[in-house]
Image 1 (spheres, rainbow, N blue to C red):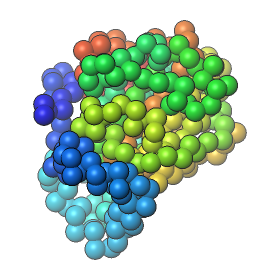
Image 2 (image 1 turned 90 degrees about the vertical axis):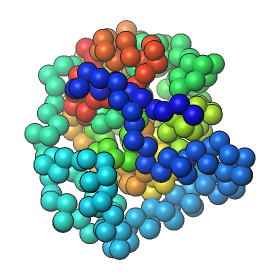
Image 3 (image 1 turned 180 degrees about the vertical axis):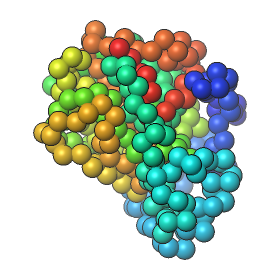
Image 4 (image 1 turned 60 degrees about the vertical axis):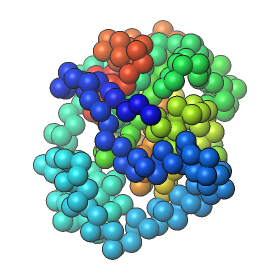
Length: 293
């Protein structure tokens, strides 16, 4: 199986992802016995809830220091010292210092740290992670009226790994509505899994929020659950105006994704995002950095 690579906006180099739990992922999604386990219990919400509760156990605090070393994390970015976390989950959804993620002055910014793919037409997306696979935007959105509003618009997929900052933010200023939860299983959203079946993205449990803006029309913001994501927490107040880059919520333990969808002809995505996505290759960038105009 070929390694997972991405283009780093800051180093201007192609880099190889250090995959957390790689052996388990490969066994689960490529081995016949692993696939039996996947369908029997790994994809089930109870498995992820059980694992999430494990990460809330005080004994897991012993995992924090080795994790920081293994993944070469910059502790200077943390809002609180690493010694202050009482469980691994607390460390996982840690906050960062504001200066660690400055908000770019462009119109639209990335909602999360991660590896991003961007497409000018959300209904003309194919060959994502592997040739022949195509997005099903209607199934992803799971609401016909909302789908009609956003079909043909631009889409940005932001994939978070377990090592990433796991709070997600608003990509623009506006007024957010209520969040709708779409129930489903919890498959992995790692490329190891998505190379097998892209439809995991619109089978998984996910959320849907519409952000109304003055300049960019409505923006659809979705958070996608994944294996071992204990829960998706929303921290904003529906109906209350938000600033660009303001926190929207956070994921508990596990890698996951956010999806940002714009109405047609409302945004021009960043050049390096589009260029890498056509290869297709993910672009690594921080929350708050330039996404589009």
